[in-house]
Image 1 (cartoon, helix red, strand yellow):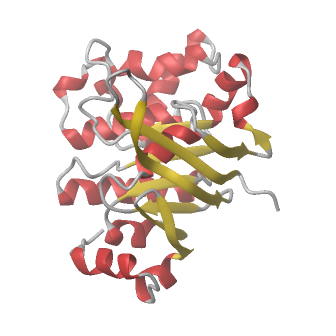
Image 2 (cartoon, rainbow, N blue to C red):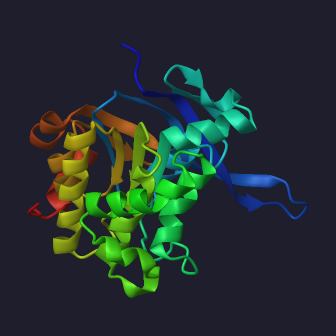
Length: 263
């Protein structure tokens, strides 16, 4: 069976220092030969401490930044070979939920406008039915339809993240990349968001690439876990195996350093 997403030997280095004449003299190896796959309907967690390169991987997968080498295939298609129109179509199939709900929503737009924008961009719902679809999306993430007229600053952090999830769901994507979606929230609110993501996956058969530094969170949500350290994947396997019988010393240190979180 072909994986929904397949990443092979992905590399991205950033210039850290330049000479007096502007020539690069030192590099940061943010992503250094990363390979993994995500099957339809599963959650692959990409876990590691801040700065290990996992968020850079998410941006490379979506072609928000371009890799130096390697390949990314989605449903067998080479994403690095897509033209502008093909890339736009891919962006419907793959959505991202960012870490910071305070920064990821346009403060000048109402919730209705935020959720209607992707519907109009991809011409998914006739104008006459968009209000109804917005109300459906809000109910799906546990918010009341009357909130559609409000602006992002009128909501708590957890509510904003629910709006961001609704925006991702609006285009009915095949893959959702969750880039540290609960790290900016307090523990109890973060647990609610994780439970919401799990419920949505059960209801709609969603596929997640879940990026986090929290082993308890990924233990609860993920099918498989890939552990990143200094730009490389050092261990990958089923969630139970990685959390109960870790092989790499870095994986063991992550498990020892992270307190248990109830979800």
